[in-house]
Image (cartoon, rainbow, N blue to C red):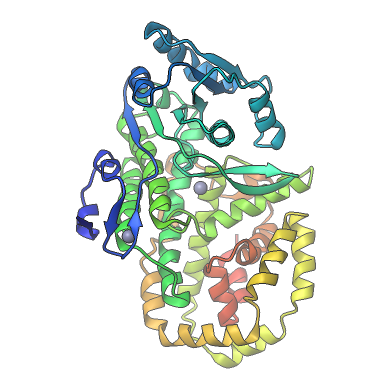
Length: 456
Ligand SMILES: [Zn+2]
Ligand SMILES: [Zn+2]
């Protein structure tokens, strides 16, 4: 059976996972990358059945202080009642940072008489649990304590290695337990973060399409629709989040899982991560490099990045720009890569070295390449505008964020307006993805957009 856009119009998360590997109308084979997902009240009670299914006799539990307080007891008593022995390791430090020391500590406390790993937590615990699963070759189940980010089912972990943010291959969760009794009691800050990581899909999905038009990137309509549906579900339910309504919390958890599955389908992070995430990456790198630089939950930063990204595209639309070769040529010819690299290093710190290295391979600033892209942009101008016009007004998303107490300015992490502008201009250099700032650079209007978008 070939799965089409039609299939994705009303498929449930359960049926999506049951598809297993399938042929998609986009011409590729996709697989969800996760075998079991249980989201319901009392879902923790399913743990023994899941362990039996993978033939595990003794799981190793990995958790942090707060997350163990939230769900540890429930997990332990379910295992004890079902007659499963276990070994547990709760990190003695709080907060747990995603570093080589954390992974080392998990590995050195690992009990090799265990035959499966159960993570109890979300962000960092999950990233570490996936690293431990890769190192030991064991199956991994995560008991989520908060729907705070979309990395539950991804096969990579976001880690700080040698003081630098890196994405490292790890083992995706085989099973995800989203117990609504636990998730509904998660700190409100983490629930908001989950919404923020979902709002990011507004801009990432649009930019995926933009990249298809401008640089011919692979695009899967079925995957895009699936993630868009999950996003709409979260936006519809968001007003009930402050009341910790189980349907609202379920929408966020399901949405994050679907976004993760969408990335597995696409084989790249495109459906779930675009320019808005690059704001977050830059702030994370600065926090590692400079003692006075603060940072927030990933999803909070991604949500702020989404708002800024929407503001930038809005400034672009309001400016009624046209592709003008003279302006673009003048702009790119006056651009000095050496100067720019110095600015990157000064603002971002050592993390910028990887960005500079990336450009050495990619040569996006090459004048011939720019000329070719400009021609494509000019030829597809109407389609580009039409795509960008699908974005909602920034004010609408800002209002939604305010309604759930979500911060709407990076001043919460100490950033001035000027620093937000600088962050924005540097988003084009994070990875090799074609994002909005690259389009504005190609058109020679990056400075204008920066000034117009962020008059705060
Ligand atoms: Zn596809
Ligand atoms: Zn994210």
